[in-house]
Length: 312
Image (cartoon, rainbow, N blue to C red; front, side, top):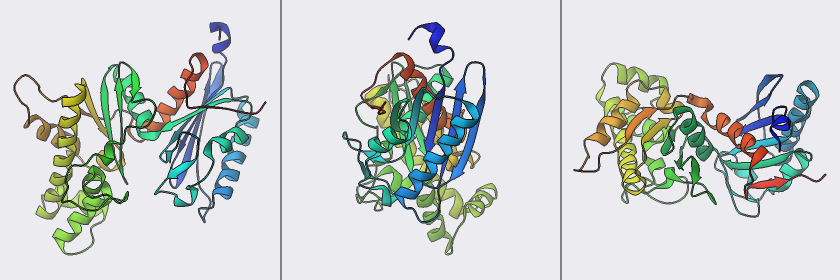
């Protein structure tokens, strides 16, 4: 598309979550449009998609035409476009997501990708680094890999949260034992703290316990950071990234969490192969939304196998 045409292209980013969806539309000469809405109760895919369709229609009516759409998705989607797994909204399993995209965005060039991958892409571009690994710590552990400014492996998502870090560890939501997510996610950390304390621990309790140096809080956090550091080091041995970025709402809400991951990773350094610098995510909870913007922008001038063309 010629430069004169790309300047006025309407870009839409959709960050799909288990409980809410964020929309962001951008175009030269038009104000940026931001909107967040919660899924309707009941977790019915038809109702969910009807709400998304209505929100997109309202956006178009208020803001203007949309030419390309980038979607950040936490679900595992097979090559045909069907949802295979999504613990956040299990009722979506079996949904023809590619077909839904064609119906909701019939006049737009649309692509979707894993939310962790897109967060990695956004953080890499924001930091100005070609090679980055990203770990997002929240309800689960997501992540992505960017090498040479491109997502790797590209044909599927980088499931960093399901790297096995402890074969004798806890059972993961995926059904396997010992995944990073089963050790270092927010819920896993809170369960460990609750067990050590002898009663339920909320996130606010954990924050206060960490601030006050309570052993049950400190030890629970240390175990999570150690698992994340081991993952950073292992990825470094394979990929040699310049930077490892740790984000997600859980990590962002605990002062000292990311520095502890970095410190623990540095302790494992071997001669000639130091681990990458570990930094906190600069975009915070908006990493995957910004990644969806980048995906929509890339669609203007490039092609990707994840494109789902609308019926015109």
